[in-house]
Amino acid sequence: MNPLAGVVAFVAVSAVTVGIGAFGLRISRTTGDFYVASRTVRPLANASAIGGEYLSAASFLGVAGLVLTRGADSLWYPVGWTAGYLVLLVFVAAPLRRSGAYTLPDFAQLRVESARARAVSSVLVVLIGVLYLVPQLQGAGLTLRTLTGAPPWVGEVTVALVVLLIVASGGMRSITLVQAFQYWLKLVALLLPVCFLLVSWRRHAVPTAGRLEVADWVEPLGGPHALYLTYSLILATFLGTMGLPHVVVRFYTNRDGRAARRTTVAVLGLLSCFYLLPPLYGVLGRVYAFDLVASGRGDSVVLELPSRVLGGTGGDLLTALLGAGAFAAFLSTSSGLVVSIGGVVSQDLLSRRLDGVLAFRVASSLGALVTLGLTLASSGLAVAHAVELAFAVAASTFCPLLLLGIWWRGLTAAGAVAGLVAGGTLSTTGVLMTMFGATPPGWPGAVLAQPALVTVPVGFAVMTAVSLVTRRPLQVSVTMVRLHTPEHLPLDRGTYHPEARREETGPSEVADRV
Image 1: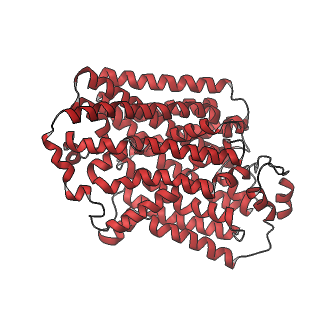
Image 2: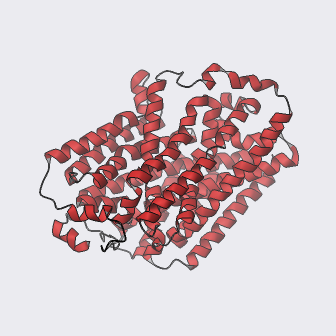
Image 3: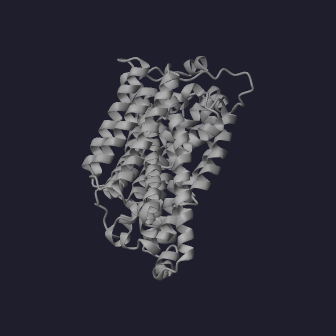
């Protein structure tokens, strides 16, 4: 590919992103604008923004790379990432919006009235955000190297700086506009090239098409421990979505619970349309770019196909379009993650020293720069697998907290803390050992590589058992009513904001707050 086309695509997407972010700055003035866009985002716009930040490097590049190398088993990734929103729609979306909280730690403190639960939740938000953000920056480096031949660190640094610029300038209101635009850019960037590629494949007989018929590629559950690995992946992706901080915070930007449900339905439709496309690139990669499997560059198959199939100026233009879509994926997801990290750090560490907007900007800058340092120092995994590990941690921690906190009045502070620590410790251990290549062979290695099938039940079990043992007279009726009462009934739903308190709050204080 002509490197100039890649540079133009990269610069164009970055310029448009900064431009839209600058427009968001003009209408971002209050703390509410920076954290939750003053809760004025309409369902379709919010759904587009959620699609923009949710469809990350793993979706745009990683799914196709996994389908290329692993075949049918990898189709569970897009299925799980989409179906997770169905669970979110049924059990979480509306009650979470009615809570009035800004962040997941806010919800934890509101529900169990514990500063300890808030502190543990804050640590987990930062951990999940970093685990999810690192592969976005790695994907940016991979894309820029494929398009221009530049060293990977150039793409990683550039994306981090652009994200930092738009987030620190306009906060949630700014990135809402950016992410909504970027969803549609990503959809068009995948849809248009694949149409040309499929037409070319149809017209020309390709002698390597037999690679599509290899038994271990087209038949699922064929490898060692495949059944366990598949079900663990399904559980992580189904339940991890509701525990992703950058996704959950989006529902606080809706006007009410009904708008949150409508947003989730729209997200299901948008994701379903998008996830039809990456597997097609994986299939075409088996025909035209099979050498990427042996070289370990499967994640680049989306960017490699146009030049291999079409060549010439047409191939360069389509590759540039795909590169633009890939950079949109990195920028949109990274923006949401930096907002979620910045929101938590600013509330829990900086709010006593700095005012709300300044604290958010400082916290976002620290989150982006620290993660960039970790990215530059890491060797990295396959992009989709790295994101999948973040889902496993989210499913093992915040999923039990949200489901039990919303639907079971018996959850206690001690139970919430114990479950978060147990699920978080076990899943994080598996993640770290996998990232550093320290997993043993056999079943222990399989469990560490895909820990969700073990760690999610442990999180639920510990949270439930400790809550049953530590029952105490805690008045949660007011909070439960707040979570489940429709908005049209007369109930004060002012925003819950703990103002960086660190002490336990009593039942009467919760009642006064509501």
